[in-house]
Length: 399
Image (tube, rainbow, N blue to C red):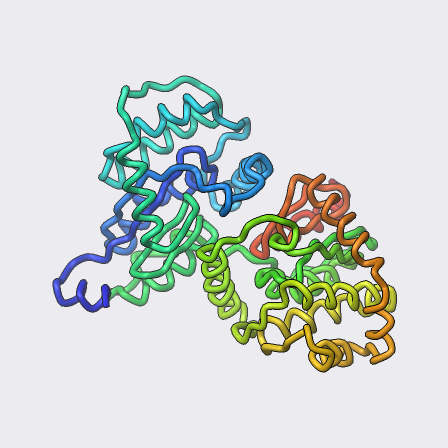
């Protein structure tokens, strides 16, 4: 409806951008506003938003520490800037930075100010700031973000669809390119990052894969990380954990809905099946983890991971039923006797807790997550390109 109205009125397409000054990903995203506006003839509307609520962004200290490190790596991959010496900003500096950006509506001016002030903020350096109260701007931005259907800073919203951070801009650009009535102005502003088909030999170095049977993102990562391990002769170590909601961490509806929509978008890009979902939370997850524990012992772990996730997120299989779980197990070479023995064995619970503790010890709290050897861990199905870089470092003897 918005697209039709815009076309009838002859208006330019409008892109809304939501910026958090204490969000490393926003620091990267804001740098791209002028290029996006120029490449696609957009009207860009920047909004200032507060830090996300605890229920949608649990473990805030881990999240910030991870985001700072990840933003640096992401900046290098995309030719953007992020301070190498970045640190957690002080609360008074955050308020001052918000005061600088409040009221700025021109995207070029907003981008310039966000970069200038953000660079100083992340470095812990002083910057000139007016004594402007940003509360009204923050309230407006929070309301607009909620209306758009998202909950995090660093988000772009365009005609009913949200794109979180630099990683999802290729999806946005593909959509914007379809709207153009003339040939593209040039190459995409942001290139898609993905692991290649390169091969190497890391001589069975460990590649840890932290996974959850309730995670749509784990579903679209499982076969890809297994193939990556095979190409580099890495030892794939499965580290299953209980889902967040079964570990006492909230996952609000708006977050669940975005994750499902975003996974569908990514699955379509990758040519992977997704959409017929039977949520295995609770009993289904527990039964699946019990069978996975036995499957790993029998050398069928990766097969069962992929089978279970395919059933839960692409085939609508109910793993809480005996028939559903048995079908998922049998197609990986496990027998009914194997399933029965697995369900009678509770030792998987201690393993899952050990995996959770290990994951937290690496500074992460969510899945899918990956670690190659003793190198820093990575979080997200869209970080397999970084995992591949680590494998290349080890193969080259420089890790």
